[in-house]
Image 1 (spheres, rainbow, N blue to C red):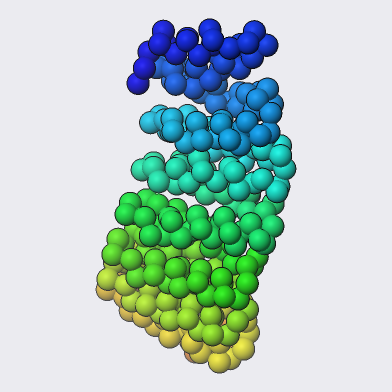
Image 2 (cartoon, helix red, strand yellow; image 1 turned 90 degrees about the vertical axis):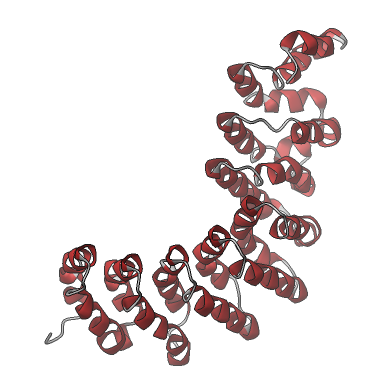
Amino acid sequence: MQTREEHTRIADSVDASLYPVAVLIDELRNDDVQLRLNAIKSLGTIATALGQERTREELLPFLQEIIDDDDEVLIALAEQLRQGLEWVGGPQYAYALIGPLEELCNVEEITVRESATESLKILAGHMSSEHISRHFCALISRLATHDWYTSRISVSNLFACALPKVSDTKQEDLLKAYCRLCSDDTPMVRRQAANVLGSVAEVLDDEEMLDELLQAFEKLSQDEQDSVRILAVKNVVALGKLRSASDWHARILPVLKSCAEDKSWRVRYMMADNVKQLCDVFQAKAATAVVPFYLRLLSDQEVEVRMIAAARLAAAAAGNPTKE
């Protein structure tokens, strides 16, 4: 990184009216983390002084090139960019903010990536269907096929905000990309895909697409990694809430048996911990499809499972009293 003395040439070579802005731009590349952080928090001032066109064409590409290695600075950048619609000319130019946020989706630190994807979701809410299809879907495609697993983890968070705003054909493409992530070679990518499965299901109406999603759900519930399987119970609840039809529930409930009998105590723990929610969602089938498996967990071989099952006994009994 260059020193501050080398950067002063930018500030010294501009018109006096833009000198304060040039100083801030210099500080974006300064060795001092606090100066860089302060400059990031002044991006609105810089953008206002430059104007909307120059912000889009000069400032944002500049930010992409100087992605910092300090997590605090990167988080601040993501938070500032979600407020950047006015800087670039309103919602019709929201796509201009995608570039630097895409770079933040690639970094290793999870809190930075989460802040970046949250900002992207906010921007997507302001974008037209045309721009979602053209710009946001292109972003999803790039991240979903990126060599870095961090990018593929990040992109899982973006499907639910894009799917409702695109055509059926684009929905099919997005769902295929999502399902590929559900089968990714990296367990952490599959885990995040499983983590957002419920939110993806909520925005799908097409029966064929829902069937494809259920296949991905079933596959994830049998994943070789318990860190992925542990999310199956959460997804059973989420999917069960979507529809009350018996044939729909019949596709979902068999996964509970697998969870209750899973070789990993952590998965069985999740089954016991969520018994009340499961009984509430599957009221008509609770006595035969939920309670029997839960009762077995009360005498599980692992003490942690027995303890959480016992702790949830009162709640389960209050909602679903049985002779047992």
